[in-house]
Amino acid sequence: MNHRSATSPRGIEDLNLYCGLAQIPARVLFERRGLDSRRFGNLMMTARSVQLPWEDPVTNAVNAARPVVEVLGQDARDRIELLVVSTESGVDHSKSVASYVHRQLELSPHCRTLEVKQACYGATGMLQLAAAQLTGPDRKALVIATDVNPMDEHARYAEPTTGHGAAAILVGDPVLLALDEGAYGLYSFETMDTARPRPDLDLYHADRSLLAYLECLSGSYRHYASRVDSADFGRSFDHLVLHSPFGGMVKAAHRKLMRELCRAGPAAIAEDFARRVAGSLTYVTRVGNMFSGSLYLALAGLIDSTPAAAEDGARVGFFAYGSGCASEFFSGVLRPAAAEILAGHRISARLDARRVLSFEQYEELVPVNRACLVPTPRRELDLSGVAEFAAAAEGPQLALKSIEDYHRKYEWW
Image (cartoon, rainbow, N blue to C red; front, side, top):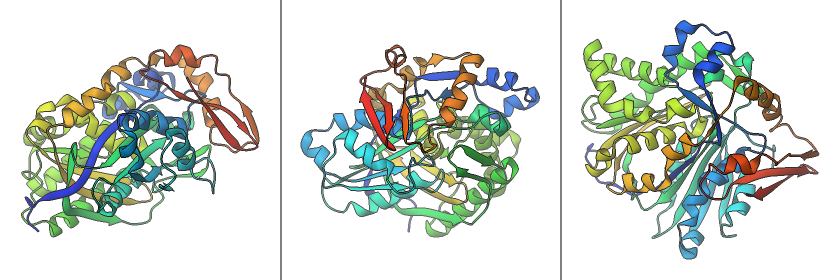
C-alpha cells in the first residue's frame, strides 16, 4: 500500500466537544494538594474541567452531540443507523448508557445502539469499525466518547490533569477528515496500569502507564509502517495528534519516536514539536484528560489553532491509547471545511465561559461527584444552580434530575 494512496470514502463529517461548565486552575489544585511544585511544569496544564452534581456520562454525551445532530435535517438524522457510546463511566452493568443518549437525542428507532469499553481507546476503535461498516450512500454513525472524573486527592499527580466531558464524532461523508484507507497499525497487551474496579475507585500506576503508553506508541507505529509503503515518521505527517492525558506525556512520546526513528537531537526535536504537535495541545492544557475523547479534544485543538492545516489538506498521524491496554496508529487527511465546521461550534469561547471555582468549592463537589456512578435506588438533585451555570453555555443543556428505582431522569435547561 502506498502512503499517498486514496483516502477512504468515509471519515469524520462533524466533531463537537462538551467540556463542562466549571473549571479550576491546575496550579491552584496542585498547590493546595501539597504536590511537588518542581513537577508542575511537566504537566503542561493551565486548568481542568470540573464536573457539577447534575452532570454525568449521559448529560456530557448528549450536550456534546446535540449541536451535531440538530444541524441535520430529519432525513439525515434518520440515516444515523449506529450509535456507539464509549465510556469508562457506565451507570449500569447491563443497561447501556447509549440507550439514555438515544432517547434524549431523539434518534430513529431503527438504530443499532451500543456501549463499549476499552479505556481511552474505545472511541477510536469504534470510529474505525463504523467507517468500515458504512458502505452504502448517505449512511451515518454517531460515536460519542464520554466520561466523568471521580478522582480525589488519593490520585496524587493524576488529579490536576483529569478533566471531564465528551466528544461527539459524526461518521459519514469525510468533509472534516478523510481516513487513509487501510492505513493503521495495532499493538495491544494486558497490563494493570489503570483500572476502575468500583464506580468510585480509580487505580492509577503512573510509571507503568507511561511505560505502556510509550511501548504501544512504538509498537503501533512500527506495525503501521510495515503496512504502509514509504511511511516515514519525520516526513509523512504534516501534524501529529497523540492521545493526550496531559501535555507532558505527549511531549515525552514525541521525543521518544523522534530519537528512535529520526535520530534527531534536542534542537530538532523541539522544532518538530512546536511545528507538528504543539497545536494539538491547545485545548488539552485547558481541559485535562477526557479519557476516550482526549484524542478528539486534541484534534479539535489542532484544527482551531491551525486553520491553514485544513485549508492545505494536511495529513495527520494519530495515536490512540487505552489502558489495559490497546492502541492504534492511523492517519487521515484534513479537508478544507474542517476549520469552518469547528469554528461554528465555538469551542474556545465555551471553554472561556466556564465558571472558575475556588479550591473550597471544588472540595465540596468531590464527594458529591464521586457518588455520581454509584448505583442507588433513589436520588434527588438540587438543580437550583443549573440556570446560573448554564447561562454561560450556548443552547439548551441536559441535566440529571433524579434517580427513581435506579432509572435516571433528565431535564433540559
